Image (cartoon, rainbow, N blue to C red; front, side, top):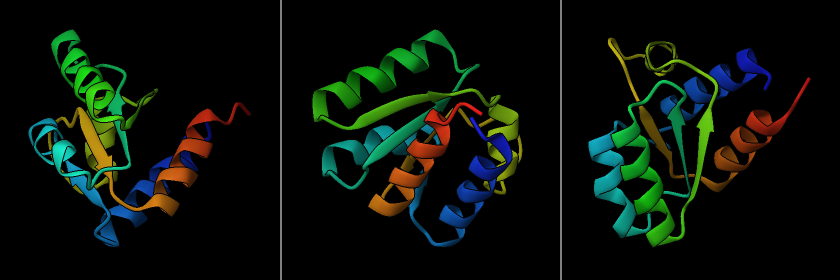
Length: 105
C-alpha cells in the first residue's frame, strides 16, 4: 500500500464530506445504503472486526482491512484518539482508496 497517498486521500475525502467516521456511525449508516466501502484499522479489536465484516457482508458493502494503526487513521482524518473504522460514501473516493490500499509498491 502507498501509505502516504492513502492517508492524503483520506484527508481529502473527509474535507469533501464523503466519510462516515467511527464504528457506531458506520454500523448505523450501513442499512441506509449510504456507504460504498468500509475500511477498518489493522489493530481494531476482534469484536469490532467481526461486527463490521458481518454487517458489511449482510448489506453487500465492500469491507477492507488497512495496514494503518487506529491512532494514525484518526490523525489522518483530523480526530484525536483511536479510530477503528471509516465508511466512504462517494464512489470515486472509494475506488481510489481501494486501489491505493491494494497497490503493492
